[in-house]
Image 1 (spheres, rainbow, N blue to C red):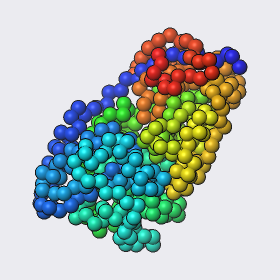
Image 2: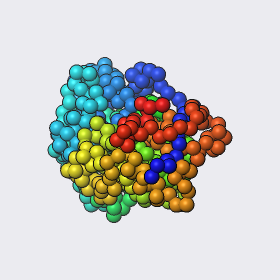
Image 3: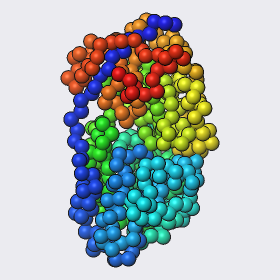
Length: 424
């Protein structure tokens, strides 16, 4: 097939805030809390480091650690992630080191282990697991991004409370909690486990981070444990308001340069692509509605974990080759999302994929296909759109058209540039 849609570039203009002094804001927020009255000099504090690619996370942790040291405390970092990194110490250290979270930069030790302590039994009858190093500390500081969950809806989704069970529960805890969620509900299990953790595991405070549509740090809030649930609800409202969004509600084809665990728990954010409740189709009141998703690569930071690939219809063959099947299966089985580890139809080149995908768009002719091309689901400020969107783009107040429509830039092998960001 040779008659492809022509594309043009747009820039979305967002008006959400951005923090310019991230380290200073961490210090100011922590200084508001009466921590000195709750600690004694010389005590230890376990500080969590998760597996998501949170903007400025190393800077945030370094600033928090500096504040704890100013109180005479002895902080250390613990990797707080369930089955990520293949469920191994080495894999989890590799992940946080890739984010710049090192002993040298943060100024404190990193203590990594997959071992947990069973703290108690919940009222539902399953054990509460907690990282052994964090449990041995005098205090715990929970740090994490607050954002909409990729598979559940509620007033508490992904954030500090989830970090207290899935993150600090490590692989053993994540296995139990995801099974419990199948029998009960995500909100019930989060509240049940987090409540036990706050009572029994000496949580000193939390630092919640909210990002804007440009993948920038927009808000930081330090909270005491007794205020944590209420404040996280407030932060989630902002996170849902500021989540990245595609400019158009319908697409025949969505090209995504890269997916990975640093981007989202499901590799690509289901809230952005419209697949939160059904892996291959948006439900009635869910937007956008995308017929076919095409994955072109994995991020380096995901270290072969291709969780979420099974939610796409097509991918480049190189994605299959980049996939660490063991890591991917462990993560998807632990999370109870088996289809996310399955392989879509793979083809050697982008041209080969489009030749097939354009046969699946219904009655629209290929040149009139509605196609969007993004870098990843965290990065949607600039994207390429097919000519079919041009009339609508001209009417949208927050969309700037950057160029006239032109042909898709295939190379001699039938491939597009590796990144939509690198070609204009």
